[in-house]
Structure formats: C-alpha cells, structure tokens
Length: 315
Image (cartoon, rainbow, N blue to C red; front, side):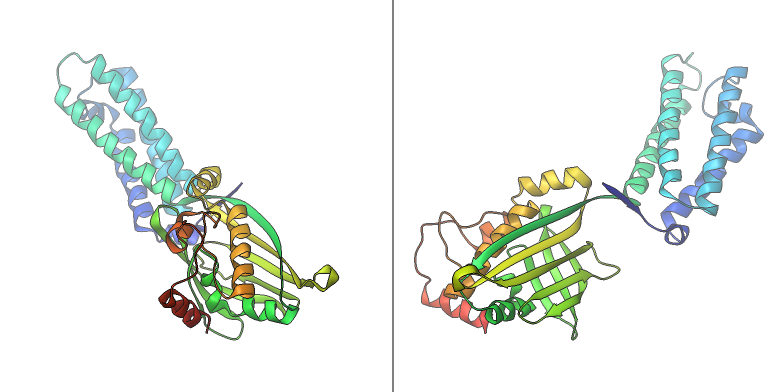
C-alpha cells in the first residue's frame, strides 16, 4: 500500500487548512493565557485540575496552529482529530459530573466540539489519499496478423468499443491522448497519457501524465502465435487504485476487479478483430459498465441498426 499526500506548498494555500490553523491559534491563546476564565466560559469549575487540563489543551492547539500554518502536512490534521476526540471525552465527562451550574454552556461547547471534529475529519481524509498499487496481466490469441492486431489496438479512439470501463479516448497529439473512464459509484475519472514505446507490430506502452485522476501505465505486446495461428497478445496494466484494499473490494463487488476486467477486455477485442462485433450471450463478460453496454441475453445476430452503429464506431 502507498500513501500519497498533497505537497506542503499545496496545503499552505489550502483555505480549509489555513482556516483550521488560525482556529487552533485563536482557541489556544486564551486557554494558555487565562485557563481559569476559559474553563468558566465552558461552564466548568476553575479548579486546579480543570485549569491544568485547559492549559494543556491550549498548548496542543498552539502546536497544531504552528504546524498547519508554518509546515502544513496531513499529520497535523490527524493530530487535530485525535485532540478533538480527547476534548469530546473531557466535555462528556464534565457533563456527566456537572453540578448543574453552567450546564447549558458545557452542552453548547460539546456540540461545537462535535462540529469541529467533523470538520477536522473531513479535512484529514480529503487531504490524505491512500492507494494500492495494482498490476493486472492477461493474454489471448487472435486469428489475425501482427500488423492487423497492432493497428486495431493503436487506434485509441476505438478502445471504448471493447474496453467496457472506458467512456472516451481522444487523441490529442502524435504521442498523447486524453482518457475518460467509469469508476465505482457512478464516478468518472480522467487522465492524459503519453506513449513511452511504440514499435509497429510489436509493442505499445504508455503512462499517465502528471495531474491525472488516477496514475496508470501499461503495455501491450504482440507476437506470432505458434503454428501460424495468428497473433498472441499479452497486455499488462498497472495503476494506483484509490482507497486501498477497501477500493479493491468495492471494485470487485461492482464487477470491476482489475484482473477480471482486463481479461474481459481482451476477450471482446478478440471478438471485434475476428468477427467485427462483440458477441452478446449469457457468457459475455460481466461488470457494472459491461452489463449496460453489452446486455446479458441469449446469443443472437445483431439487428441491422446495431450492426450499422458498430460499423460506424469502427470506421
């Protein structure tokens, strides 16, 4: 697993991060300078124990403020979350043992602390991205020549015809393209990619460029099949799947587990290059998008309208 966080320069200009930093400073100063008065403001007695606890919380807030404003990092945000949990525990304890004077102030402080906790959790989660590096490999043999198989794959704008998770691929330059793909929960991800190797009839390799919604790379290798039976195709796909193991579990639940997805894509590619169409049957590949684009039903010939649409997509 790999944890990827936004750079310090990005967080330094993040309005939410800076706002939380200043909030920590504004809360910390009065707690350190006048802990007794702050404790009374919360509706609790200014006993030595309460004053010490208030001063300690204030020192923690000032430390978080210094970190978030001077050297912002998700660790400071998670530190605030931990501090919030401690504050809620202290306030809950105060409510349970309250003598009745200032109860409303303590209850209001507890509600405010809960709201701050929710904000801190949101900031920490959205500024920290956990990913799992995934590599999927699949292979198939197609009954066409090396050059024909290579040419079919190299027309990137036609990849969505057999790659069910792709919405669109647009060629933007001699070696660059823009990709749009479906993701779990109806989301869409986009990235720009560049060719890193391009050997006609042999190899196509690519990688995503900086700023992509998802980091990905891969290659497709073409080799003569034994006995002149056509072309062997071996595809490898690597990418960082968001949300770590949870993301992989969710993707698998929706029929988009990477290894199965790539195997299904190659199966449809074989059908397209050999027959000019994707065969529809009960055995057709599954998957959230595939269920919509390639309905599961008994095998039958395409209608004239469907065949015309496929020919237009392939032309």
